[in-house]
Length: 367
View (cartoon, rainbow, N blue to C red):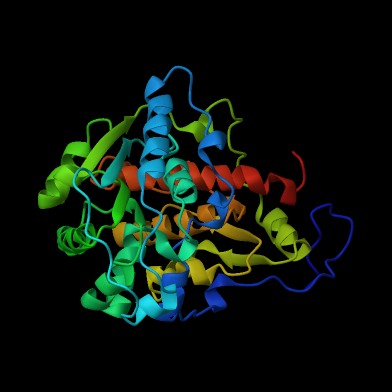
């Protein structure tokens, strides 16, 4: 068999073989789960000043104003002691929560910049990083699973702020668990900020979920102020269409020519995701500079689709470009899935994978 050609077609590939996500079986210790509760790399440098409101959507400008005030009002003089000491239950007892709302809920559709604003709030809060936590709902439930409920309460009670991205309203059991946890944290004086997805069956435009969120957290609703953020998906605001898929040869050649790239066939990768807990998908992508996939096709079932959504989120957070052959990403999910209760998750995944596909354009030949 002849050697595969580089993207230019000028000769055989001499670069080392690419990595494979399917060959990875990451194990994530509990202390890493705590230490990594910070905004993901994509949002390292975001600030309120870098959020560009749509001039046709005044609610976006208003959200920035309110969140800046919320950050300024948070007490930065939280409990003393390092995050490691609090992890094991030491350090000064947290302050009692002051009266009034201690939380904000960002209510808007996918792509209006909710995560950008949530991360900006984390950065703007004047407290050392060990006194602030940022994570998705899934990451928070994974922390409870790793530490246990009481230890999680003790760990996070020393924080000034907890930001929860994509609060999962579609899992009643986990919603009750996290709502109970948040109640304990509010009593300890922790400020809260959250975004959420849409409940199953709440189709409509699939955009806003404030009433669902406030109802599901029940007794905590008085602690939250809802900020509605209108707008279109910013990833498609004035940007070119995502490139069509490349050929298998182009994807393979780009993977060999790109240092730190992974190369996997789509079907085996979907099978591998079923064997790796979603809490480890971030670790699965450690050190990966680009993901190259061959043979992309529609996902076969909802469980597989939801796992792919989590992987798409982790890749987007880490700004890992995705180069693929097969079908375009807007054909990943069936019409039944896109019209079902998890439609918002699937549209978010399509939007994020499309953005990453644009980022990957420089890895292959110009068309």
